[in-house]
Length: 220
Image (tube, rainbow, N blue to C red; front, side, top):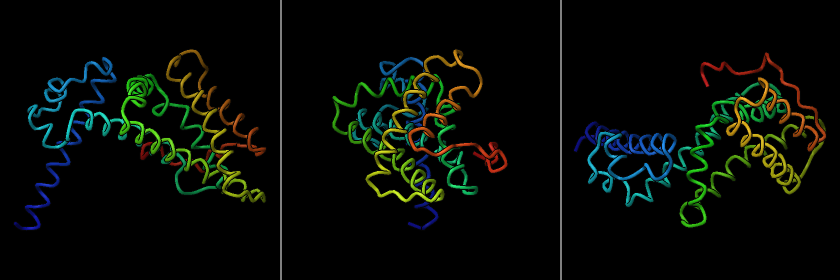
């Protein structure tokens, strides 16, 4: 088989897997976990039911893949918001703000998370994915916190940076829940500034956004 043929088959398989994951997320976001039946997922993805087992070992495996995709998407969106330039303090501020504003924090994101979270303690694979995705975001915070503090002349060890990240993540998570549950209850950017003030208080490091260093939102 030629390399071109192998590449074509691989791209086709990846495309179908992605379609199944997108269909699962769309159904769960719209009508909850019970709507994500094998038949409904297959119909929405435009794939036969039997083909699902070709790409995933079980429906549970597909649900787990959808959970990972959703959570990675959340972290990736926050990370992209920081861009690669500017000061470490500004990159941290941009990640914090992105984490409590749309599209990271909105009713759809919360609905999906709520649909998945009740499965975490019933399914070891889901629990492993939950831990991995939690650590992925927390490690992002930890790295940015350590860099921002070092930039300000405060060197912290890994244990202290980890504790800071856990505390800051807890604050961000709480505001993320409020933003998703009651999106119309707050003024524009109100939760973002509360998040920035709270994280700044935890770290003892003022967080003021440098608007000139923000990445182009059209490319995030």
